[in-house]
Image 1: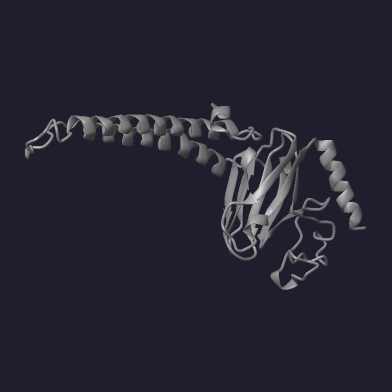
Image 2: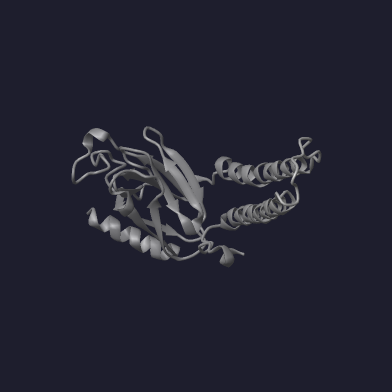
Length: 246
C-alpha cells in the first residue's frame, strides 16, 4: 500500500505508524467515494423524470442516509481517538533523555535553515538577537565560554543513525515549517516560541528538509540537506567542524 500511495521511504522509527493512519484514511475516503458515487448514480436513475412524471411531495421516508452519516462520523472518531491522538501524545510527552540523544537547535529564517550544535562541553552557548550580523546570522555570543566551541551549519543537518534526535525549533522572522518527508517529521516554527520535537532516524542517506509554510518570495528555495550517517561518520564530521573554529 505504501508503494501504491506513492509514499516516501520510511526513514524514522515512527514512520510506519504515521503511514498506517494515512492508509486507513485513504481506505475510508475510497469507500466514501465509491459509496456516495454509486448512491448518486442510483438517485439519478431512480428519480429520473421519465419514471416519475408526477411529483411526490411526501419525500423519502427512509433514514438510511442518516445512519450512513453516523457510521462515517464514528469511523472518523475511531481514527482520531484510537490512532492519531495516541500517536501524537506518545511523541509529545515521552521525550528521550538529552544525554542519550543528538540535540540540535534549528533556527529558521528567510530563507535558510541554521543548525546549532553544542560544543564538546555539551552546553549550548548564548544567542542574542542584538549580536546578529551578516557573519553571525544566529547571534551566537562567542565570548560565552559555552559558545566558544559551538558548531553552526547552514542548510545542513547531520544526524547519527538509530539515535534519538531532539530538535529545538525556532524562527527569527515569520512562521516557517520544518518538513522532512521521509522521516514523517513536520513542525511549524512560530515567532517567539522554541518548540521541541524528536524522532529516531533509522535509514542512512541524504534527505531534504524543506519549509512547508509559505514564508515569502524565496519560500521555494528554503531547502536544506539532512545527512544521516553512522556514529563514527557523524563524529568525524563534528570533529572537522570543530577544527574550523581553532
